[in-house]
Structure formats: structure tokens, C-alpha cells
Image (cartoon, rainbow, N blue to C red):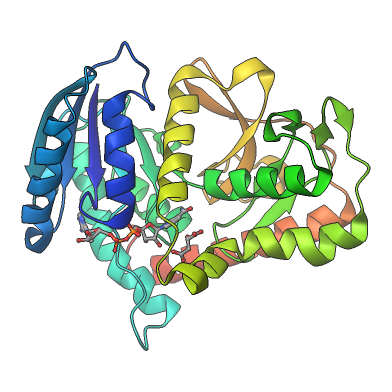
Length: 322
Ligand code: NAD
Ligand code: LMR
């Protein structure tokens, strides 16, 4: 399979590429041809990573090519991991960040439209991930919008791990966790449908509202504070999980979380790229239907979706939705 990774010479890229090449994402029987896209200033560093990839002699790795132009980089891409983005700099407002990233994701959407495989799967990791996915999809009219997704799997994995630690159980015993809304501090990590070892969780509401939700929602900031830079290996690992499940299916009828263009489910306005509980069936994400949403959850889902609608309005005003 032909896999294009943008921001290949960045922190996440360095943690991601070796796992893709080793077969962790697409399995031991799938040969992967990697196409690395970087800015011209970082293309040399990406060449160095290509040399290291070759030196690993992974049996699953085919070719590795480096590009500083999106059009050839996405040519024939079956999977596109859009990691490279413009980080927020000193004095930059959220609007400046949305505008700067529009300058990246609009042309990348056009390049995907021009040359990617008709059934390309796109995962946007670069922040603000949900709205960047919306921008890219808006510039790729020939690719169905649902092929554009944004990553909330890291938030999902964080939520599973926090609950498992709280309940003193292994992570594999936790099921039915959901992330709703934006990959931002407004996200809602939902435990109201969660089971532990197959049994409904007796939810400690005080811990849930006062500790669990803020810990998961602010985990990205806590890692930046501790590490001095944003999460990289865990983000790469979540990207591997997202694409693996999308291609191979979520195991055993389980759900996970991913941000997809809304079909109007659960009152999320159509087209907004929001996180939902999802299953992957026959190579497609499907929003888990029919979950009961209590008043506590409703308020939190609505707040995060309102932020997404604001972001959509801001990029629309900037002319970034075409
Ligand atoms: P980084 O700064 O280390 O690397 C980003 C790389 O992207 C750089 O090498 C840069 O040269 C490259 N780049 C910038 N613009 C590009 C373009 N137009 N085309 C190709 N390459 C381009 O950053 P990182 O730590 O690897 O993080 C990447 C992004 O992922 C950031 O936006 C970060 O906020 C985001 N992130 C998202 C999640 C999530 O859960 N969705 C988690 C962690 C980080
Ligand atoms: C994360 O969730 O770790 C990152 O999205 C945080 C960030 O702002 O880069």
C-alpha cells in the first residue's frame, strides 16, 4: 500500500514511520511504500530518516521517497497521514493558527483530489486537527468527505488508561469509552456507557466530573508542560491504532473514537468534523447508533460541538472552505 506521511521529519513522524514500516499499521503481509512530505527546509532531514528506514531492513518496507511538493507526494496515496502543521507561535491567536493551517491543508486537499487513490483514507493529526480535516475535505470534491478523518484516538487511549488505573484493571478489560467533539480541552470523554470486564461501570460521579474529565481533556497540555514539547510517541501510536482499525475493522464489535464529518447523528450539525464513538465495519467508520445521552453528557457534547461550529465559521469567513 502506498502511504504518504506529511511532517515526516518532525517528532511524531520520527515515532511513526518506523512502526508503519515494520508492519504495525497494515500487518506483516502488506508491503508499504512510504512517501514522505516535508517543507523544503526539512527535506534533508527526511532524507536522513529514509536512510535509517532502509537500514532497518524491515521485510514489509518497499520504497521510501522524499518530497517537498504535495502533488507528487500524494500521487496514488491509499493512506495519507497529515501530521505536519503550523504550531502556535508567540502572540498567535487561534484565528492566526487557523489561517496558517488553511495555507497548508487547502493545497494538500487539492493535491489529494488530483492524485490520491479514489478510496484514499486520510487521517489528520496536525492541530487543530478537526478543522484542518474539514479544510482538506473542502478542497477535495472528488473524494467522499467521509474519507477525511481527524485523530481523537489519543484522547480515547488516554481515557481508557486513566479509567483502567482508577479501577486497577488491565486496559483490555475496559470497553465502551467514547470521545465526543473536538480534539481540544472542550472534548467530552464519556464513561456513561463504559463496561469493565463486561459489567457496567459503577461510575463515581465526583471523580468523573472533577478528576477524570479534566485529566483526559488537559493531558496534552500536561505533557507539553512536563516534556517541553507535545506528545509524540503516544500520538504516533494512536495514529497507528486509528488506521489499523479503519483498514482491518474494530475487533469483536468493540467501539473506539474517531473524528468524522457528522451525518447529523446525536444533534451534531452535518458536515462538522466531530469525534464520535465508532466501529469500523467493512473498511468504513460507522457512528455507533442509538446511545442514550443523559443531560450531563448532552451539555458537554454541545459545548465541544459549539467550539467546532465556531472554528468552521472562522475558516469559512477566511475563505478557507472554498
Ligand atoms: P513537529 O514540529 O516536531 O513536526 C512537524 C513537522 O511538520 C516539521 O518537521 C515541519 O517541517 C513539518 N511541516 C510543517 N508544514 C508542513 C507542510 N506544509 N508540509 C509538510 N510538512 C510540513 O511537530 P510534531 O510534534 O510532530 O506534531 C505535529 C502536529 O501534530 C502538531 O500540530 C501537534 O499539535 C499535533 N498533535 C496532534 C495530536 C492529536 O491527538 N491529534 C497529538 C499530538 C500532536
Ligand atoms: C495532544 O493532545 O497531546 C496535543 O494535541 C497537544 C498539542 O497542543 O499539541
